Length: 558
Image 1 (cartoon, rainbow, N blue to C red):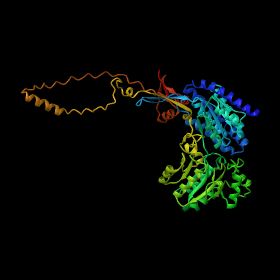
Image 2 (cartoon, rainbow, N blue to C red):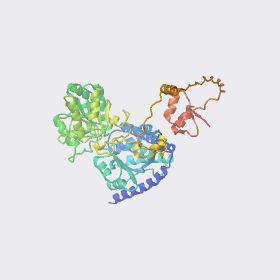
Image 3 (tube, one colour):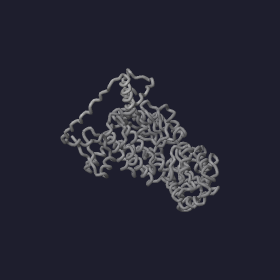
Image 4 (cartoon, rainbow, N blue to C red):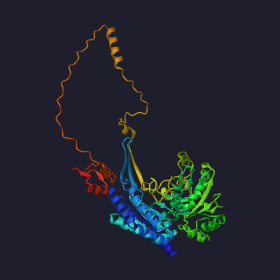
């Protein structure tokens, strides 16, 4: 009980400090925000290996090399995607519609961090939170508390060194259910960013606060008859084995056509897959799934050899993935669920339509809204999968694990993937800074936008005047004059006007100055061997200013 009370009190103290910090942070300019976020990303990148080792040692999940890559993704890759986004002041202006859009921070964010991707998720959430001028307090998973707290400390020190107020980033050191509940429900908390199991996400949505939660992923990988089979199986195994399968977007089942079954099986074996027999499937199922129908944490993020030993299965040396041929999906087929480890279910269907149905079955068994991978050269089938599948990320001819988070695709880079209403989430997006800001809209009246006098404006339809035919007018005048017996004296043709004197040569127009310059603008100017003119009103990002001065691209006008 004392530990619970201590956790609750710590949550309140961190939230009070975060609220005061956020009031100060909300006054930052875009350049100030970008400087803080850049230094945080650099700190996360610099500590990528150290934090990866801490995470593996503390949780026992995954491997150091892949966790280093995830930390680099969460810091460097995410920062590259967000660094030039406008999240302060007027972010869009539509003059035609007469609408200004103005960014406003949401406030203090309560962030729940899982044990499977602890340090990379912490880095990612901190960057996108402060990019929107929010502060953030983390509740770490108890089994990854140490590495998450260290990540938070490194990011906090970098932010404060860059000018952010102390308290912008906080982390519970005594993480309990009671403390986490207090963190989510406290009056200072404006929004919840929850990554974790179904129960945790449900709890986040139930406290009465706005929340972004993410659902589980039971990701099918369909290999269609037209696919490049060697490349497809290589991609699937790369995704499945990445960090020993701890990403929720990693592949959970191979579904393929009967016509290419033998070729797919050969490639699976070539890539280090071991096909289990019926007895081994039964033994493995009892180890992987608990009596409560949840994944056994003892197998999460472990290599295939360790899991096989727990199930009493002897496998060849060099086995990377345990492959279970199954004929159904559901409670009677425990290996058809999300496994968070290098284990794949394997299904053979008569054609793409039957494979489509099987993929939907798998998604309904714990993966609705998340991700599906398809390997095919048939664009019509790819489109049909896009139209029919109950998921919001369909990655094509790439691994699902890193494709869904935006590493091998052009999806927005994120470690937090929404599953939409199908998965019980409020969004189907990859979470970005734009999900963590409010947008004010200043909207001018339609009459103002059209330039009308509002006192004379009317909703009555206006009749369009017919165009004037000058020939008809001339003929009408001639007839009128003849009827009245009048002679029309046409005026003499006017003399041509004297030629206007040639104006004196004037000085050339001053060069056009740029309103906004980012790092990409500088790189483009270097490639085109041109200068960018700026003045006192130009907005130049810090990275653009540094690179522009270095490359002598920027020309400063008085």
